[in-house]
Image (tube, rainbow, N blue to C red; front, side):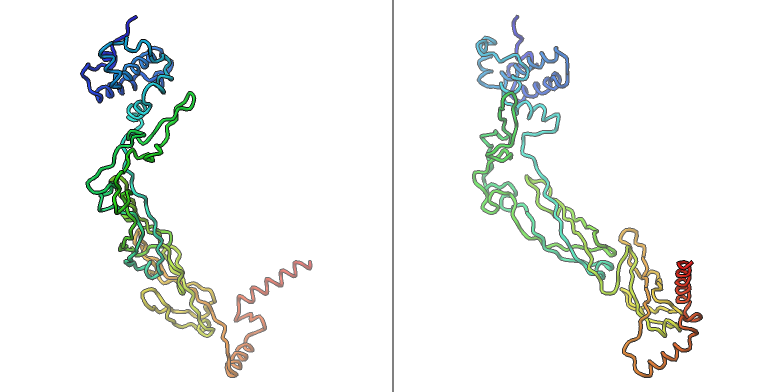
Length: 378
């Protein structure tokens, strides 16, 4: 049975150029590939027929022999009928997977542009800076596109050449028994190009190490673990790809007076015993200055007073937090004789050692202790 004309199989004319042959082959190979037509013998045979025609017509020497002698030019060296042996050994493996299935899975034989890496910078702020906002200048090490070669890596006036090992594909195929393994080209390291005359400034890298000075605006209300993103201030991309981003990681230093919890501020305010007993007015600090706080009579140590609107303004919804002051009654020290006598007189004025009338918390405590021991002895 006479074989069908190879040009007819691919549906191209005898004057078709290489790109037309590849285009026709891609379309037919995707249509009849065994993985897409499992169990369909007719599609499998059609795929072998298309594959055989492509292998002959894509090779200039084989095509010339075919144009001159027809099928008889290959009768003594016919490619086998086994689908997979033909698929992996007769022609360039990358022409099939790179050109055909690269279209299916998004592959490309050209060197791909790669976005630059993102950078992270740790910044420590005082509580005042975090609450009120500020502008900080930072210096960061980074890779920047070489201005001399415009990122190409080649000396001025020259261009990279196509790698002769992988023919610009960046990948090579190694036959291991029945299988063919694809790996990065060891000569061009997967780039597909070799720089014969590297740029003297970046030494062929296309990027140079540099330090960059940036002004970073810190919004009011920012807190520890918040991050500020600055677009396109990361490392420069390769092959003219965009730069990465810079992330500024915030941490707020511990304050000697205030403690922040979300948008509220907390502080401890010491008061003396007479102030706690008789009441009065004291000044307490805020981040905007001093404010007066009224202490009612008989205030107990640890009582929390809220001063509204003196906390932190939220960076998200701009709501203002509060300042919460915890008063701590301080025991007097370094007493003189007169002060000791006055305290002794005060002590004697209390009824009983527990202060049943003047110390209600003490009375409740010792009453509870008595009940505890009474229960044990029952």
